[in-house]
Length: 378
Image 1 (spheres, rainbow, N blue to C red):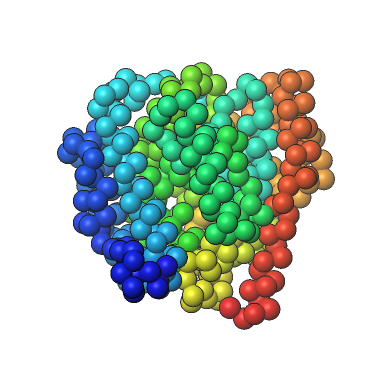
Image 2 (cartoon, rainbow, N blue to C red):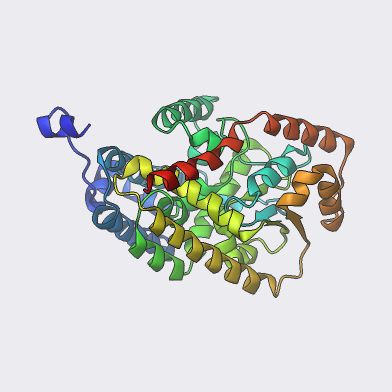
């Protein structure tokens, strides 16, 4: 790729906020930026975008593949924002969709949130987000998002064969809503791929309300389009722990499920995931720096969770990683009772099928990767 740029066979990506915006906005009317959004939301996104692009350009030290991937992601987030704004200008009623009280899984990355999420989402009384809708949130022709998601995952799998070991994904299956907070430029997805400390520090300190208002707009649109607004949505993103006060203000009728795991195990696994994502896109991946980042993230999220939960009066339960491994069905029965949910025979059968499927998956292999980084002294 770098050779193609040097020879003039392909134009190099330009990591400049104004240039990326201008390129992505060519197909849209100016009103698309404001569709469904307040002036505060519009200004917040613009400032986040400028700061994020600057941090990527000046701090991330990306290789040729990383530069191309960064340009693609940044261009896509602008294009999707404008597509959504255009949609809400055409169909403002989507933003009035009434949602059933959600079930929100809260916990650190690598604390078992994915396992809990998929078990609860298997219950036919609940709804969930699919990968294809998370990353392609604007409705298109029937089946087109499924196809796009499948092609995208195939390409990502070719670039990074460890991906499915770390976080198994399929286009039509259960997926977290990380892409929907990333649509508002929350720092979480970006700081796991790129060394962007200035943006992380700035975004952590900034009010996340604008990010989560965009998240809620996308959630309502997806629920209306798929006809599932009347079913409780099981949602999870590890970054929810960082913004729990904002989240429960937005969804005061939610049920909360807290995922728990030994914090040293959480740290080790999080470092493995982050190192995998960064090593593909930079030739200066620093394991010590990544370890320090995730010590900070765990401490930050622990503190913010405790602060938010101190005043929480709604339904809540806890599921521990080790206890789930010992007897998932026992733990799920207890959680349903504490949340006042009805655990039906159909739900149990679906969860058993999900557990059997998980036992056959590739995700257990990811812990081998950190050992390779440690061995090579990266």
